[in-house]
Image (cartoon, rainbow, N blue to C red; front, side, top):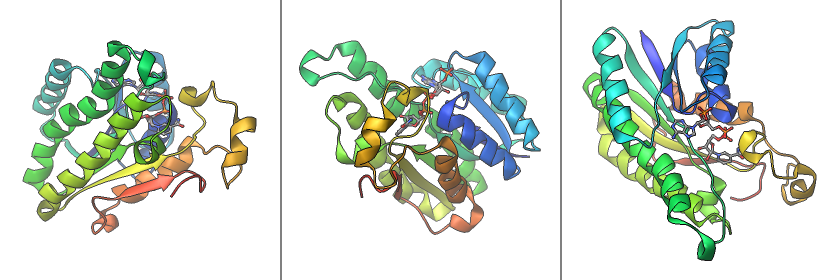
Length: 242
Ligand code: NAP
């Protein structure tokens, strides 16, 4: 059975990606950190989309937990193959660098960049053996351009962008592609405190994007036909930055 793992699939962009991959026929593993109710709601939407899946709790920033849960799942499910991995889990803890606490730096870098490493290295092994895989990393405009007040977040996402390009070169021969999508302002819990009316004047499309618009791009990169696209960063930002 063909499976897709989406980290941070319980809400926002991750949820829309779970639904998109379900529409594409994937059995979806909906990872979440703490919000089991919302993860279950995502799973219900996966089923409504005509597929199936399961919820899977682990903190991507916790190396031991990632290993224990993912290795345990693979041992119990030898018939299931994870073909698509979407590293979407991420947090922001904004603040000017001169006031930034260790915890703000560590948690943001550890979730996006550490999480990418801990999860991907486990899933990658079976993709290389099967000689097929699609890895898609959700990064950010902030990781391309840098945004004031987000040195931690920009560094984390910029790190994932560089790792995307490096890993793409390592695994290209085995038919495993590694790409990133870089959203601008997308309407989710993460941007709930940002005033769209005030910000949209800066965006050529004159609005925030939707999680479904990001999921559409992820779905495209996940298709078998996207085999010759690797090491790329696709911006989904309404023309805000290119
Ligand atoms: P969101 O609505 O805040 O949702 C975050 C998701 O990540 C939740 O499912 C959450 O799980 C999960 N998560 C957080 N930390 C985790 C951890 N340590 N381990 C496992 N799961 C974890 O965020 P979003 O806006 O959808 O963002 C999704 C991704 O897109 C992030 O990487 C973010 O940086 C990126 N992004 C977002 C925007 C935007 O405008 N929204 C723009 C650019 C990039 P729980 O529900 O269990 O808490």
